[in-house]
Image (cartoon, rainbow, N blue to C red; front, side, top):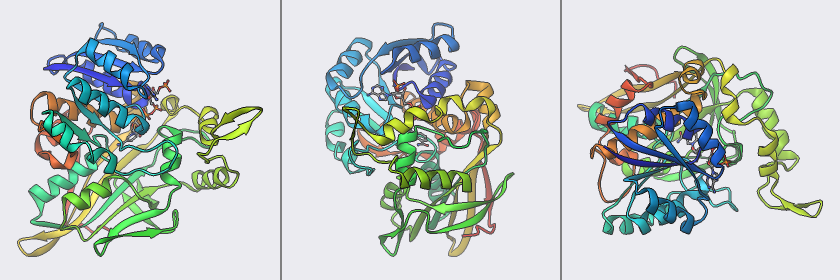
Length: 397
Ligand code: NDP
């Protein structure tokens, strides 16, 4: 039982707040803070029961964060703002002696590049302070990393080939929209592809490698090899992995829009002058695209995200597919948010629960796969994201 401070009142923050509010024995007091306090107030009001306190904070400012943390005195800060704020929030946690959890690794604003090195560099400081930092506790990264840890612990003697497969077969009825923050999403999917093989990273052109994959309850969907952040920590933490790849489905319409956006320079992250004012094209684009938080109402269909793994058990090669399917409609009915926010927010709540229950608590900075996957996966089944497993099936990869 403990006090938690959630930072970020977007789609994911809404789900985290909803889920935590329903568990007063674990989360005795909850504060939701973000740049725009009115958004926090609206979420708190919808949840009701005076369960959520709210506050305004600019999470780019360490002094503002320190002041807020000192006044509320949480046991844990859950960062579901943007990846740009990871380091300032970690700095504030160190200064105030509070543990930390997030769902996306740090990304500098002026460079479309995400890497764990900046956050891993905090390990010794968190360790010396006796504080825990849990990195990447959404769905991917997050549940996919925990699925991999479960396979390594409970299914195989040695995992060798890992393919993370992420399908969104939902339809929101818009010509083009992103399922989470457009700026972060477009930066992620337009970069070069990258995967791990032969003890090194292999680079591809964006969306160069693709093939149809069959997803349970959905059917075949064209899936594109992209780089995704959990690959970096998984190949480090499971050195028996010979090849690790990440596949994501995209529709033709989405890719065509993306190509146009890039070709006309709207995905740019360098500031340009417009009518005497500096603007960043991708930030302007975010302002005109649909808000991912508003997509839920007409969103139909399911997401299906999982891990397809090949490895050795008792000297024999085995295959294993572990996945969750999540319905956009069901997620919206429960929390007012679509499945992409839901599948990120539920794991963040469970990671926070693991910390509060001292099941995931060790001084230092850790990726989720470095904790025991068993208690987390038990809770995942209880809180809206049940998982399924298939043994010795054709992995198609
Ligand atoms: P949104 O853009 O919907 O929400 C982000 C929230 O953070 C907004 O409320 C925003 O405030 C707030 N914020 C932004 N900058 C600041 C700041 N400087 N100070 C205080 N608050 C700030 O994003 P999502 O909810 O979709 O995503 C949240 C996080 O989850 C992101 O880091 C994203 O990368 C991650 N994510 C992880 C996934 C996973 O599976 N691991 C999948 C999807 C997302 P305002 O309302 O004022 O703009």
